[in-house]
Length: 88
Image (tube, rainbow, N blue to C red; front, side):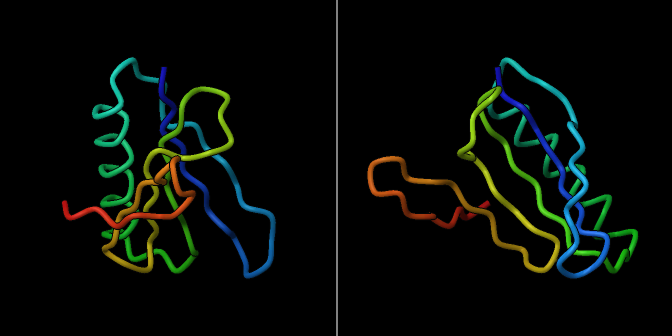
């Protein structure tokens, strides 16, 4: 199972608010859920900093990472521990 999660930082340095967007059996469906939430957030012109991750249920590492300040998306290369930019 994969979790799609949204984090919103209400003020700089404040603890982020974590919202579970859903749990999915398919990783690609979970990523699409995060992309839809990101598009809705950025089109609302909210000023808070937010980011979205897709991770295996209960995991601390993310399979997909995106944020509200850029159009870039990343995955974590588990072999090297490096973030790799995706070309959507």
